[in-house]
Length: 153
Image 1 (cartoon, helix red, strand yellow):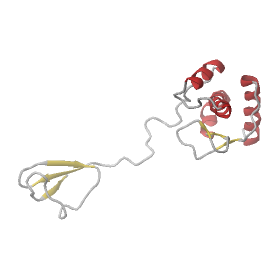
Image 2: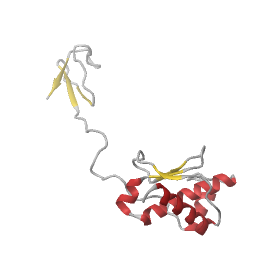
Image 3: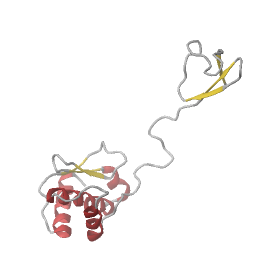
Image 4: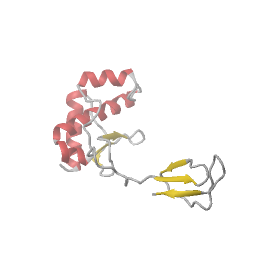
């Protein structure tokens, strides 16, 4: 599916489900990572994560489009368009739109590299400190007794 087909799909869903035209742009945004799509308040455009289409297909994208169109139409009408608003939740229920999209990241993979923990110990009082970031032991001292620190492997 390309951007032109997505635009046609959004326009069709808007007319069928909301009986109102979609007058702005809809397109795939590959920079989206964890969200299925988003409605942009300033431009009124809708962005869809292409990974949702790759992983789950057209049915998932249709659900995301319904959700984003709820934001779109409520915002243009001046009603409550945010997730916590009563109007938004009622419209979601009315058009049978999902509140959340399916998971787009593999649960065990991490976007950031997992860091090791560093353990430091005071030479005098044996107080231990566990830190995520390594530091120079010559520049810092124990907070309990002001003794010298050493790194523990």
